[in-house]
Length: 354
Ligand SMILES: Nc1nc2c(ncn2[C@@H]2O[C@H](COP(=O)(O)OP(=O)(O)OP(=O)(O)O)[C@@H](O)[C@H]2O)c(=O)[nH]1
Ligand SMILES: [Mg+2]
Image (cartoon, rainbow, N blue to C red; front, side, top):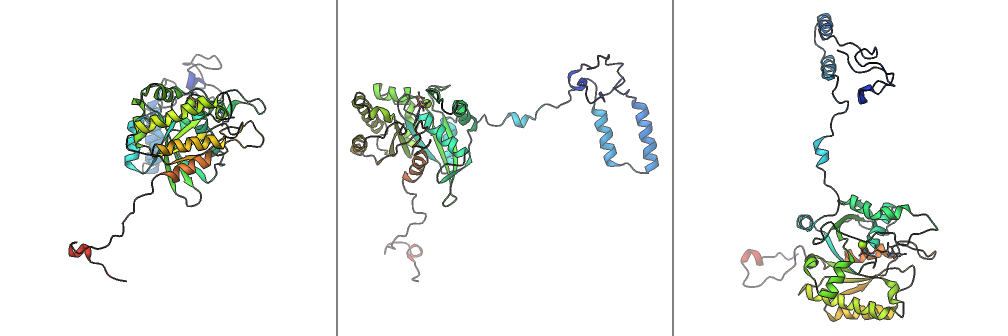
């Protein structure tokens, strides 16, 4: 029996085919294995040394382990294969995260083409470039999902931008939202923030507006902030503004109804600021509409990408994230200071004057 091939330029050990065309069983580059002789030699050596060298013993067992026909590389470790898929997270996983640590769950709604995915892609690209104002990237449980939605934006050439940088969002399970996870570190105080951001098809918002189809949006009740994404270009176009405004106001009304008593902070996010500034009068109308339904509401215009030399790509996106992280309700007092009452238990009402 012959052992593995000793010729470093031959691939026999991996392919079982000799590059020199030698019959494998007669090839001189494969030494004849003579187990009996090897053992005799080992015995002689042991006798000479007087003791068994542990390293030598290991080498011998490794040599014994090499058999003709066994794969050169071992199979990948099972543990590796069970790593999380790292695609978007489902509602159950999001619940598990929000129950185990403080996390900011954002609701993102808006019609198809409003720029929902583009805003997430823009944030991810800015973070990966280290140019996300005020924050740096700390971690993500959904890197593959980010890479997937970002892929198209990496391939276009300067001066020749494509019509669509991101692709229309579809979900493998059209009934359940898919969430992206980002952990950010705030520069000013090194504080860590976990954010959960859904990337949903615009079709869901259309069905909410047209048919009051609320079922898929149940998770919004647990969100601390909701972004209402609108295509800013439509609000600066005399022929389209009335329809765009009507749809945006109806979306706010539908949200108010589906959220019942809960009132997360609303942020109206006009996109395409590189093309045209969002008209102030339209901003006022949407802010007023939100307030009339009891929401606290802000406006954060963005340019996720930019075809305009005067506006940097991603303008306003970091501000939108910052506003989101500071917009939520203030954390409750850790240990509120209360006045002692006369009917309190003695120990509870005891307080030492300093
Ligand atoms: N220049 C520029 N292009 C933008 C901006 N926002 C979105 N776009 C472009 O508009 C296209 C559509 O935006 P998306 O983010 O995919 O739209 P969406 O809201 O996710 O749409 P659906 O997934 O279909 O619901 C993108 O591919 C970009 O090319 C922006 O602020 N500036
Ligand atoms: Mg999308």
